Image 1 (tube, rainbow, N blue to C red):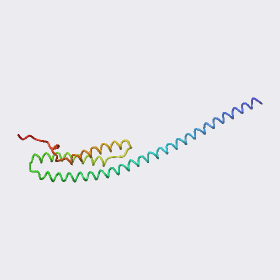
Image 2 (image 1 turned 90 degrees about the horizontal axis):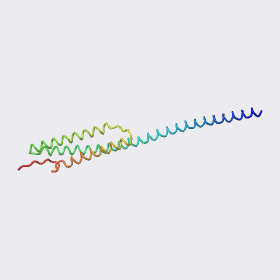
Image 3 (image 1 turned 45 degrees about the vertical axis):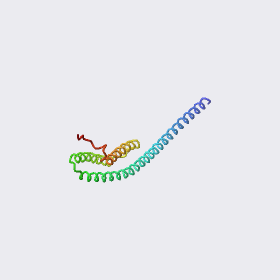
Image 4 (image 1 turned 180 degrees about the vertical axis):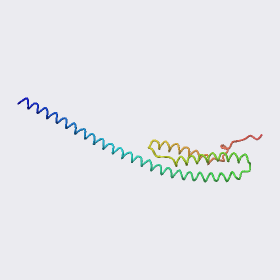
Length: 153
């Protein structure tokens, strides 16, 4: 009798351990599923934030591009009034380079796909630097430091 009570107790304890272990596994699965759901929600929130930043940034830069186009038109008008054909040709060539840069930047902005915070920050920094360089070049188009000098001795 003592032997059968010991066996019954042992079987009961083993069953309890197995069942509690199974319960732990189902809790772990539920916790993992909850973690995945929360991670997906956090990812979607972060993506929405980046997309919102991109839309704002795009609007700001579209305004800058409109300003650059106005500046380019002003420069074209000034070039058309230039009497020295060599100077006019140099200016036209340089302006064409800036127009190509402007089109490339616009195309790059139009084709950008939001893919994550790190990629967005990298794109934004690179794009801003190139837009700033183009704007500065257009603003300083007729300054003497940008115009190649020829010696006329």
